Amino acid sequence: MIRLLEVPPASSPAAAKVVVYACIAPSESVDLDDALRPTRAYVREQGWEEVAVFVDRAYVAVPCAEREQWMKALAQAEAGAAVGVVVPSIGMVAMSDEDKKLFAEWQQKTGAFVSSPGSRLGAVTGRAYGFRYPPIPSTTAGDDRRSGAEQESRAARHRG
Image (cartoon, rainbow, N blue to C red; front, top):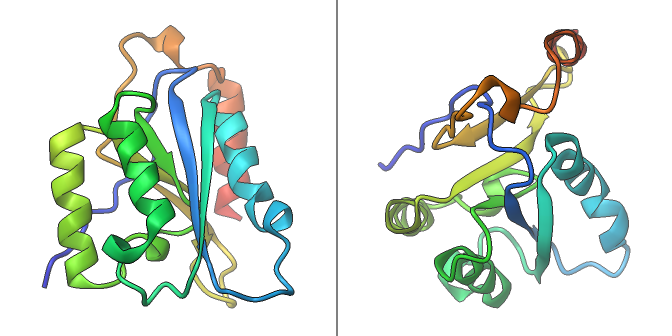
């Protein structure tokens, strides 16, 4: 079984170019703008630049290699147009061992990061988490656009 490592959010350079990707079940009742709003807000909060949005209308059980828009999102990073991909949930891009293998190979080849605003850990705790891997450290403290107080405030919101 292939496991992807989840690490605490790390600082990424401000203005990093990213693509937003989502895999949404083919339902007429889903409004794409509403579904992507939290993910796109997360991109803005990080100070990143959204260069493209790709959405597959498919079930997450469909292998990633068969999803046209996911392959286009990966191609953006391979071409150098983006240094990261932001997804609403890791489950959209790494459900099966085959998907995880494809994903890990792509990351090794491109060095791109994948990030998410987080997922619910459970109805009882209601605590959110975020992940970003591989972690991309800022080259200087000034690269992180949030001040220390803002970071602490943001962390406090996520704790409770």
